[in-house]
Image 1 (tube, rainbow, N blue to C red):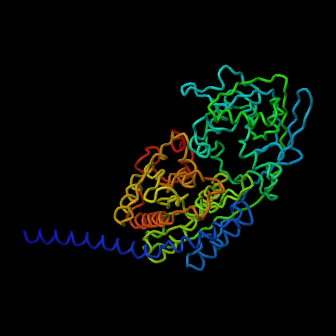
Image 2 (tube, rainbow, N blue to C red):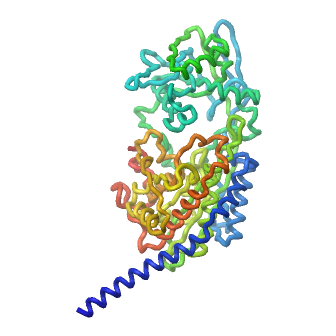
Length: 551
């Protein structure tokens, strides 16, 4: 009996000591994470002088150098084979030719409109698009909801003009991100066989554009264009975002443009005042009449120019304290690029994603104070806003074996909305142990954030699960989570500034990610792949696995 009692006391003593060691370890590192340092670094990286940190740009390169120099002086170790903190990411930058991209409108007379002055768009390939005009109101096809602008219309080969305006009663600032309204409308019209969609900009955007005498006059030379990763793998021929089966994917040439009120007036046979009046009518609850204009023919010629460029990831490592586990890795990542300039306004990108960039700096410092058994890779990745180029390139050209990465903790927007809550995206979709770890350290460390999992749903209409850098790792079968504060009306606007950051929330989120890294970095085994039966090992072979990218 005494032996049994002694053994029981020894067992509980070991448990108590283990918990104390865990608590001490995390506390030692957690104490180095301060609101003062988060604020100091974000005041710098979130400054408007960085012109929104667009990829690629000189301003983003300066931010990259700032982070790399900080990593070196903080005592982090470089991971790249050349002994540097920088991973070069090759890019193809496609920009639109101003004189070569034009729209010819033939009705009672012929009028030529030019790209940048009368219309804009993210054109990426040379092409020619033509057809007669149909005005389709808001372009909404929702019979069940009581609004159907497309009923009875034959859109085959037509150019469809719509207003870029939410339905009456929708918040005009929230609509674009809350419902993915315009993107869904355009996709539906494309399915109907249209050759193009021209969306008429709102009166508010029209006024901002006119301040700069055109759509893109305010964009510095070299900034206009779409950035593509030039190193896509052979498995990526069918793009992971917005995949469609070959049976449903539209095969006809198609494009989308946004047009000024002047051009809309020319297409529809109205005055500019009448075009503006249509927006007023919708906002007052009126429905616009659909109108076919068989006598108006449009030809849009698109000419693009492509050049090579590079941007850089910053990659650092804190070597694990265990002689065996140090050959396995936890990756903590966040993109440090932004969206640059839009509508003539600098998007300072403080929350999206300056918050993660500075959180990574604090986490790196904390890891130096207390290292887990496994090594931790800190990755400030570039080009997320243009399609997750930096994280995609990193995982396809990883300086360590991807099979040895136990998990990826991705941070993207940490400083807005309710102080005590976060969205967890993907934490329970490959490994139950990842989600369990987050919940455990959240409780034990006293951080006590509330978690919302709604965006982990692969069928969510916004497809949020697919929209940040964690997804590059998920596609390789690596358990991954996106820590996310949620959307706000300031998302991707000039109002995303440091003054709007909740530093108390940013501090708590940073500590949570650090504590999670410590926890999964110390457990005996790599996280189990125990959720998706099709994913049983980490590696490139998972790129073929359809269950990772579609419901």
